[in-house]
Structures are given as C-alpha cells and as structure tokens.
Image (cartoon, rainbow, N blue to C red; front, side):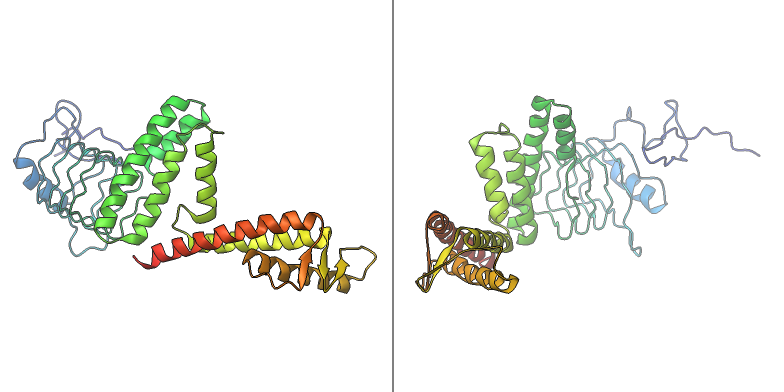
Length: 327
C-alpha cells in the first residue's frame, strides 16, 4: 500500500529537502511558520525530533521556550545541524548546545545566558541582540566576517552608504557584545580578535577621507589596534630598511668622510656603504646615536624623522607587549 501522505515543501538554499509529513500549509510542523511554538511542550518534542534523526535544518523556532534543552548529539563527533534555523527571541538559557551547527541561522535577540556553546559553529549567524551572560563560548567559530558585515560590504559596493553604515553599526554592536563576554570568560585570544573587528566596523562608519578614519587605519596598520606587537616589529624593520636606502642615496659622513652611492663604484663598495647606512639607520631609529656616522644635507631631515618615529614606535611596542603579557 502506497503512502500518499504529502511531504513537507521545505527546501533550504543548499537544496536539502524535508521528508516530514506536511500539514495543510504544505509544510511540516517544524517548518511551518504559521504555527506558534512558544508553548512548553516544544522543548521535549524538539529533543525527541532531534534524537529520532528528523531534519533540523531551517526549522522555525521563533520565541520558543527551550530553557535547559539538550541538543547535544551524544556519541557522535558531529553536532546536530540547525543550519538556516530561525531562533529569533528564543529562550535558550542553560541550553546544552555543545558542537551544534548553526550556520546561516538566526539567533537575533535569543537568550543564551548560561548556555553551553563550546565548539559551536556560528558562521554567518545573525547574532544581533544576543544575551551572552554566563554562556560557554570556548572554540566557537564565527568566521572571518559576520552576517551583517558581509551585507554592509555589499551595500558599500552598491554605493548605498546609509544602508551600509546601518549594517556596520550592527556589526560593531555584535562584535562589542561578544568581545565583552569573551573577556569576562577569560578567552583573551578571542577577545583580542574581536576588538580589532569592533574598531574596524567603527572606522568603516566614518567618512572615507576623514581624519578619524585615516588615524584609525594608521593605528590598525601599526599595531592591529593594540593587539599585534609583531606587526609593530615588522613595520619597524621595513622603515629601518627604507631609511637605510635613503641614506645610501643622500649620503652620510663616515669617520669624517662623505660617502654616497655612486654607480661608478664597485658593487662591493656600494654594498658596504648600504650596510653602514643600515647600521646608522638602526642606531638612529633606536635613538642610540654613537656618532661614528653622521647625516649630511637631506640626510639630516631623514634622520630627524626616523628618530622621532623610532621613539614613538618603541614606546608603542612596550605598551602593546605589556598589555598582551599581563592578560
């Protein structure tokens, strides 16, 4: 006897089909957006549905009361797949969501206080307004760019600055809330990455050629907003090499004798001059100033700029390094 029961019409963007029994709307209970799922009975039904192997992708759980729900796929390396699920305003306090996959889902304004989200996949998830207090977020994955950030860049390419700024503002809020919670949980590696994203989103809201945006970009390039001491070292090395090249072509006085690059000199001679200029660039950058090599003419201006930049950069490195180590 053939089963003529209509099947759910749900199909997600990745072409996964639901094989559940459809009701009058053409969708199964879990994918039917017209059914109110805020009742107390939903939690037990959802746990049973998950354990029975039912499709969880794209299910509609707006305002669902799921406090203490157990959605851990026990005895399985892969967590339950809730991709594209809508959990807007859902109560997930103290929920067990270890290793859950929420790719492309919506957790907008969801209550995740005290929930266990360790190893959760939150890539491209709408995290606006989420309540994080007390939740466990070790080793979560949010991807390189959150959902609102991607949308902001799309609108920016379309030259819709107003809409782009709105999404950049939402992105800043999401990164800030998650960063504060990561700091409270002592996950400083994550919080360091999040503060860089937070400040980048703030920068993107400034006018393109404004002083605030330019200065913010400089701080990012130099130190990753205070989170990348190695970046300071790298830029310092490049600046020292650049100044050494300038000294080579503008000339310096070595032991009282003026020396400058000359194409008529041998390659070895010009190379030794560059090495001497590199040495002078290092002692100038670090403000040691032994005096065996002195600048002449234009080299004086270069040396002054390098010494000032070096003093500032070394101080910046100390501040950033101490900040990282004291965590």
